[in-house]
Length: 196
Image: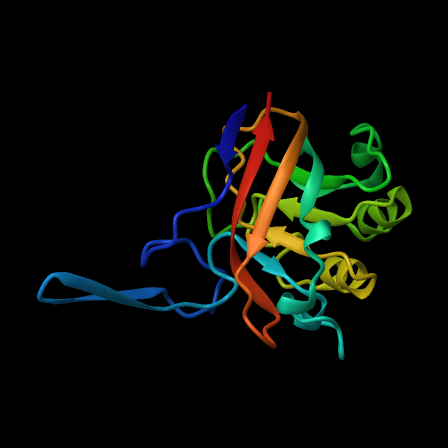
């Protein structure tokens, strides 16, 4: 079985959403032991957005059922710009799938180069997906929150800043485990794809 790590590295150089605080990692050596602390925005690097990110009284990240983030995933390659419902129909999704949107860029950048439209988000709900992931900083276009509102409003978690360069379009098993940060709207996650 092959394991593809689709998590970004978390450091003080990790690309972050405009306005989010910088990640700071501090290491102290005391005798034989090395101890580190980290200060970061929960939306920096590969992370999971829970409904409470935008929905009043929505589930927090520690309440999101893990079966939404573990299961059959479909990696779909998308073009630059607005990703419409018609593009997603060609991905041949099945109810219960997890969709991972792979853009044609070579690395994660501060600029959002592909994003879901309102109709695309509604289509994903009708298709029965249980979570949505992207290799962009957001599933929304710059300055918008409509796709977050639609998906999170239906209890569909969102994975952002995935590293999908080494994942070809196709079907995989996804394991994505966000940190169990009590009461938080998001958390960093380690995500992997399994394939035979």
